[in-house]
Image (cartoon, rainbow over all chains, first blue to last red; front, side, top):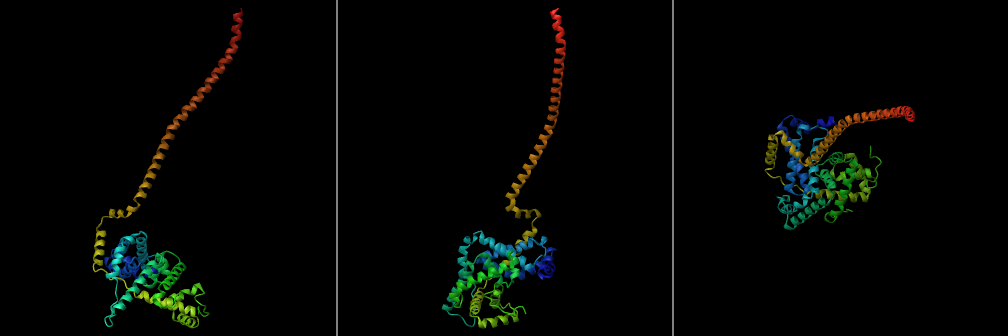
Amino acid sequence: MTISTAVLDLDAELMLRVKSGDGESFRILLEKHRNPVIHFVYRMVQDRAVAEELAQEVFLRVYKSRATYEPTAKFTTWLFRIATHLALNWLRDGRRERGAQRLDDDRGGLLPVREYPDHRPSVEQRMLRDAHLQQVRDTIALLPEKQRAAVLMHKYEEMGYAQIAQVLGCSESAVKSLLFRAYETLRARLAFMLGGGAG
Amino acid sequence: MRYRSFQCPSETAKLRELLLDYPAGRLEPAVRAHLEKHLAVCPACRDTVEAQTAVWNALDAWEPAPLSPDFNRRLWHEIDRVAAEPWYKGLVEWRPLLPAMFVALLVVAAGLMFTRSHDVLIQSAAPGEGVTTTEVDQAVSTLDDLQLLQQLDSVVRPESDAANEI
C-alpha cells in the first residue's frame, strides 16, 4: 500500500482530524473499531477483564499518538499492530498466570452462549456445545502466539495476508506459512470433535 | 486466466492458500469454479477442504464476551485525564527508560570530566615543557662554559708550571 492510498482511507482521514483537535472524529473511530479490537484481544488473552483493560490501553495510545500520527499505512493496520503488541506483551510477561483464576471464572459465567429462542437446546446439547466451544478455545490457546494472532485476524477480522503481514511485521509468505501450520494444527486437534477427514 | 492450467493445491505451496480461502468464501468466482472442478476429482484436496470448512465453522461458534456497559465511560475518563495533564506528565511514559537514560547521563558526564581534566593536564604540561627546554639550554651552556674553562686551564697551566720551576 502506498501512502497516497492510505491517505484515502476514511479512518486515516478521521485520525488526521483527531490530530488537528477534532474530538468527535475520535469518538467515531472508537465506536467503529472498539468491538473488533476488544474481540481480537479477548480471543488472544481469553480473559474478558484483561481484554478490556488492554483495549482501553490501545485506544488511549491511539489518542496519545494523535499529534505524531502519519497515515503511512491503513488505520486498522496501525490499530491492530498496537493491539497485537499489547496482547503479545501481556502473554509473554507471564501475566497469564496471574489471570488464570479469572480465566477459570470466564469459562462459566462469561462464556457467550448462543441464544436459540425457537429451538431451545436440551441440556445434553448445551453441554456438548459448551464442551466443543471449550475445545476450540483451548486449541486456539495452545497455538504459538503469532500463529494465534494470524488466525484470529484471518478468521474474525477478515484481513488479507498482506495486512496481517503488516500488523505482525513479517513477510506475506511468512504469514501464509503461519496460517498453514496453524490451521493444520487446528484440523488435527479438532478432528475427533468435528468428525471430518482431517489429518 | 491465471489458474487455467490447474494444479493440485496440496502439491503446490503457492496454491495451498486456495484451500484456506475456499471455506472463507474469499475466492473470485472463476477461481472458485476451477477449484471445485479440481475437488471433484482429487480426494486429498477434498478431505482438506472439508476439514478446513469444519474448523472454520467451529470457530464461528466462538462468539466474544459481551462488552462491559461502562467501557466507554472508563475510556473517556482516562482520555479526559490524559488531556488535562500538563505536558511534562508525558515524561512519566519514559519511566522504563530512566535507568538507561541515567547511565547515559553518567557516561556523558564522565566523558566531559575526562575531557576537562585532560585539557587541564595539557595546559599545566605546556609551561613545564618550556622549563625543560630552558634547563637543557642552561646545561648545554654550562657544559660549553666548562669546556672553555678547561681549554683556558690547559693554556694557562704550562705557563704557571714554568713559573713554578723558576
